[in-house]
Amino acid sequence: MKIELNKNKVFFNNGSIKKEIHPFWLRERVSGEEFLDKGTQQRLFDPTFLDNEISIDKANITDKFLEIDFNDGVNSKLEIDKLALEFFNEDTVLKSIPKIKWDSSLKEIKNFEYQDNFFESKEMYNLLVSFYKYGFVIIKNIPTHDNFIVKFANSIGSVRRTNFGEYFDVKSKPDPNDLAYTSLGLAPHTDNPYRNPVPCIQLLHCIESEVTGGLSTLVDGYTVTEDLKKENFDFYKILSEIKVRFKFIDKEVVLEDWSELIKLNDDKTFKQVRFSPRLDYVPMLEKEKLDLYYKARKKLSEMYNSGKYRIEFKLAPKDLMMMDNHRLLHGRTVYETKEGNRFLQGCYIDYDSTEGKLKHLKRKFNL
Ligand SMILES: [Fe+2]
Image (cartoon, rainbow, N blue to C red):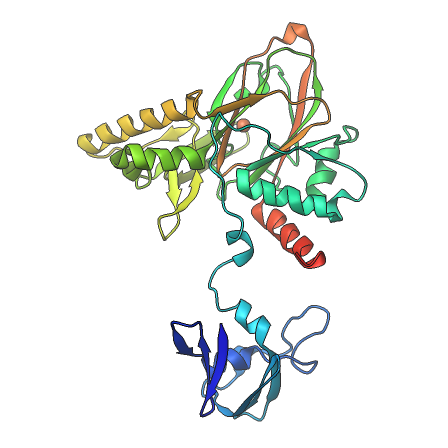
């Protein structure tokens, strides 16, 4: 990628394409104390107040800088490397971490060990990279006192509060408002599909585990989606087109949101799955369409519930699992309350927490 000049016009050239850079785009990016606050790097001027007819009177490239005299009298030296980072219209940091598809054959995934100064360490950066690759990580040795999970979550970003509170205790209790608070097995599902937006990441911290059952289960919704697309495109298509209503009610709130079971990005790549067959309501569509939809949902459910895709493991006290609620499905096997206690604490954070931390640590360690 090179920057070139031709008669007071600035071009970028990536070897195959040469395009003019709009003078206003460059004018918005002027640097120097007069234009940018040193600490925050925020603009000290409002570009919406500038004249649209900005042009370049003179431009020069010296070493790593592009020096421009604009027609409104402003002169600025722009860092070429910094400009080049903006030529990609997407998040290059996250794009550089490809998702790794996995199924029940997943073995030897690295666990992380909590220690002093963990949140500002390179290990934290590696943890976040692993999280974006696999959709989950397990961190061992997390203190279990004083709802430490909240401190953990707030040290990465901010807790995302829901109707279940800032954090929630997962143990069987009388008169529960969700099956999570029983000792029943839970089939793979995503949490809070009825919320807008759906919480992005769930943290689950094991405090006590005295039962033989109660294993945690995970399924990669990304892998299942990609496999379904290959194996039965019509099923994949209808599940990514029909929006269904997810609904949750209790004594205090009625929550509803509409979404496809498989949500795609504008470019048709994977974005999110929602799956909670106790809470979804498909609209009343033509019979033929619903015929296909019900077959497709059944197939999807069979895949999510199949041993081919599921991993099972036991969280030990002090283990904390962090999982992507837009990508993974989670569940648990049944357990027997007579055997002893099973007590987990959970809370949610959103993607801006993990992304912000990842980018900060990348900058800090120059990675
Ligand atoms: Fe859940």
